[in-house]
Length: 167
Image (tube, rainbow, N blue to C red; front, side):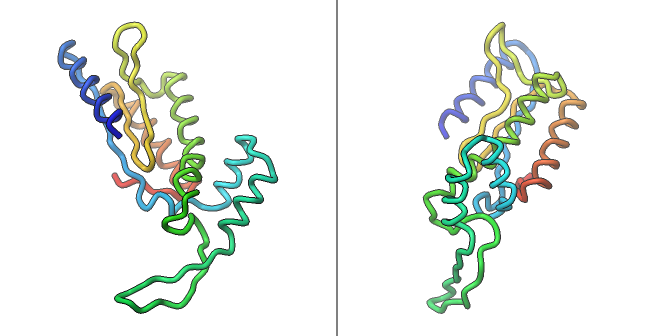
């Protein structure tokens, strides 16, 4: 978490010294572990080459799970979990990280193609994006086309995965 803050401070300091402008977005996934659709997760795991045996194991731990809600000491009736994982499940952060791989690939592709202009400092230092748990930081040049491309990628990812960003 501190890396994200330090990256922002360093980027902001460099922009100020160079009398340049830039955009910094700090985004948060809404109920990250609860929102990702199972089918999207299984497809992502398969495309990452995690193997059918491993995917079946994860499915066995998540599909068909039930939960109930404790409200003032009383419990609701049991209900099926149809997406995401149960709160407190140690797999939740790892599964969410896997589910963001397509988003990162789309962002990397857009940056490589020049559709999103990341911030560069000198010949080697680049600030583009980072993800930590359910927080996402994006650094980019002040550019309408880049912003439009970013918005399109985020909208597509939300639609495909079931995830939602707190904008």
